[in-house]
View 1 (cartoon, helix red, strand yellow):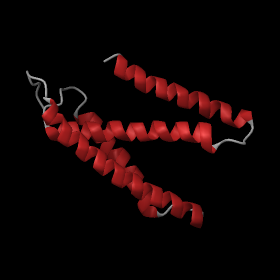
View 2 (cartoon, one colour):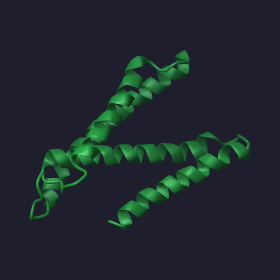
View 3 (cartoon, rainbow, N blue to C red):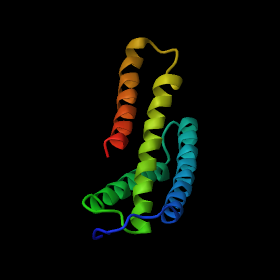
View 4 (cartoon, rainbow, N blue to C red):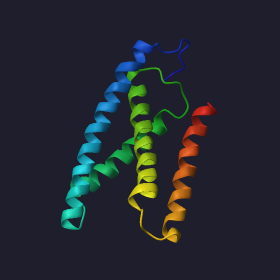
Length: 131
């Protein structure tokens, strides 16, 4: 994972990012299925919980391994895209939950999730604009 003197070209970026998107969509569909099963049964199925913990462990490992260097390979870019898209799903879920799914609840229950989701979204955009 040493530094590379030339930046990656667009044709080198497309395949790893597209592959990460495909994997994340499949994982999201499986998580949605587990969530629906949880709503029916009252408790989450163990593969759902194991998958979520596994995804977080893999994301943490990817962040740890790529924290100090440039992304020089397709595999590193794939990992970074997986983590980034996972963050995007998390931010989107917090926005949907805070603004849509919690409608009808008292303002005192909705205030913190709304403020936190807006803060998280602003933080994600600030990270893009400051790099």
